[in-house]
Length: 188
Image 1 (cartoon, one colour):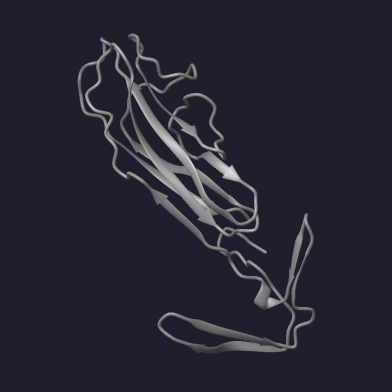
Image 2 (image 1 turned 60 degrees about the horizontal axis):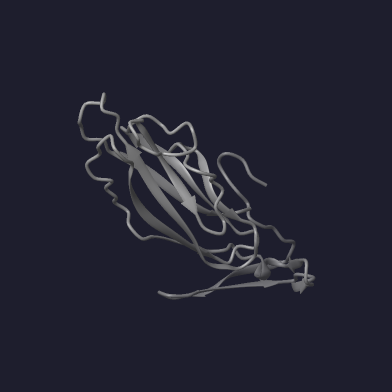
């Protein structure tokens, strides 16, 4: 029930329904003639029947710092900066946090799993948290899934992103800037 141009979240067979009334902070919908309606569940599943039970879920994404600076780099050691991403969702199948776009300039991508400095030029990030999908230090690239959880009714799922860089002595001093688009989505 989807293509590149549309997505039908749910369907139902009924004899009618309409927007009954709306206001500035509410919208009331009704249906008639549906059978069966409501929800049935056990410890391992939930089945929702009828239009009223098939609501599209919400997701809240909060980034603690949307603008970061690693500072002036030298060749002796790697420097880093941190931001925390918190996701809240009531999606039945959890969420996925991803880098969906990356643009701008940066140093050489980390290739050995660790931005360590010690004369090596590297740039990358590490992620931590219960839902983390990244192991060690990784290159900042897109598309890239950073964290995910498939559980129902999650609250305050936190992923910490640590961006790291080290410059080699052979690299001329300069300014590097990068824009990263973070996307949180309810899993379907």
